[in-house]
Image 1 (tube, rainbow, N blue to C red):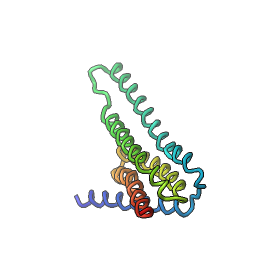
Image 2 (cartoon, helix red, strand yellow; image 1 turned 90 degrees about the vertical axis):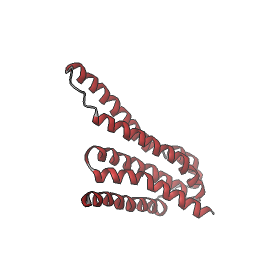
Image 3 (tube, rainbow, N blue to C red; image 1 turned 45 degrees about the horizontal axis):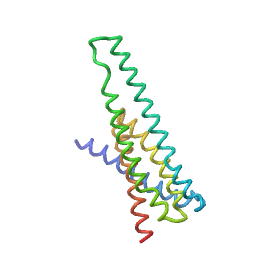
Image 4 (cartoon, one colour; image 1 turned 90 degrees about the horizontal axis):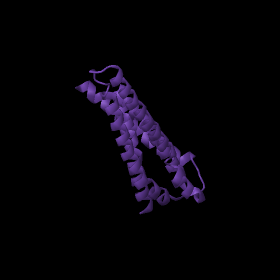
Length: 167
């Protein structure tokens, strides 16, 4: 039990460092012109959208493989646990993308000159975090926890940052 908690806290701690670092790097080093705000808002979701497309494609391929398995080996269960995990990951990824759609554009506007760079980094960070979460769901508790926290924390932090910066 203590080992499991340590594993969870390791993932949470690493994701917290990742989240703060992601936003710091975005604000400090990623400088995009403010007139590029609207195109940046529209393209910030490209990387996580591509990850979602890969996940959906993988799920479709897995379902086709499960159907082949059932046809080749009647009476045996198709490998469904991994497919169920993939469905969960896709559903959770959609939740994170919707949350990003609700928060990132407003944060980009409220943060002014740093806004465009920040949301570009949020998109890249979300894509990386979702891939790590997906892998973690199949192979590693630390990666799963890291990916989940690293998916949510930057969005929550940027919302707080934008509100404090504006008001």
